[in-house]
Image 1 (cartoon, rainbow, N blue to C red):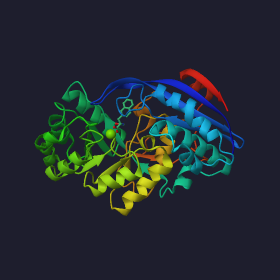
Image 2: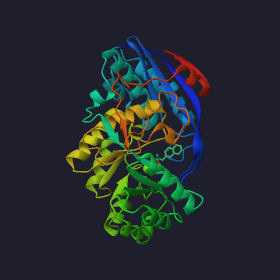
Image 3: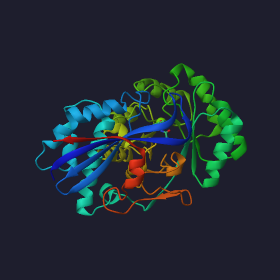
Image 4: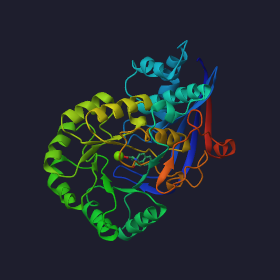
Length: 367
Ligand SMILES: CC(=O)N[C@@H](Cc1ccc2ccccc2c1)C(=O)O
Ligand SMILES: [Mg+2]
């Protein structure tokens, strides 16, 4: 396969409701899509980077720039391209995992569409539908939170994840437990605490949470290992896991007993599968994280979440959790599950009219 041209497209997608985390409140998503045109057809990749470097060091204008200047030219120079070559040819460029993931996914999508293979079939999906959880933002009040959680449970979500931060943690969890009983429940702090908060975080132990996600800063692996000795609730890492190597180190150091696998955060679906396999070898369960993707990224995540060691419901929610109108056919929850796409490649593609309606810029990179 040979890369002939790449389109960098920016789309602006309003969220159905503000989404507040410990690091920001977002009301819309400014998303970069990568469209790879090759001699055997085209493929799509979605870059998960936020508009500002608050979840990780990446941000969407920076991702577009690193793709334009370094990543796309390097991949375009490969004479006999396949998805396995992308990680190798991009490894001299450090970091920029979300930008790399978008490009690798676009190349993989083109390759698989041309071969008539689905993402799930290629990655090793073991099931045709995946159980889904939902991520619930920090709310203005406990009653508002309980209304939101009640609504998601009525829609059929099989697991609730509450965003927490200092000042919004024990009480919201207590309220959800008192109202909804033993629903599958976990929390995500997005790095908002310090290991000195261990005694406070241990107050969550009586609520039998599935896990506490990324309580401490990304680089505080040793702090997570110390916290895991002071808190009974299992520790799950998200931001800290940037590769299979960092996953192996975190597990060996006792920093986590569960991993949130996010292809965008680790440079793509091939590395994500390596993390899945490594965690399986260590008996560490994984689940698929979310970055408020459109149906393009959502399709790839659902295929990944079908691998056998994804034993916990992920943040693979339905399209309407975030968007009133998706750019692809929407993913709809059915009995708390999403069906794994079976078509070639991602198995979905953008509807041209819907795509045009949200497009804010299109740039053709000639190679
Ligand atoms: C579903 C979920 O909680 N995702 C991330 C946080 C996150 C990720 C990407 C975002 C993009 C725009 C606005 C908020 C966002 C929050 C997480 O697991 O930590
Ligand atoms: Mg998280």
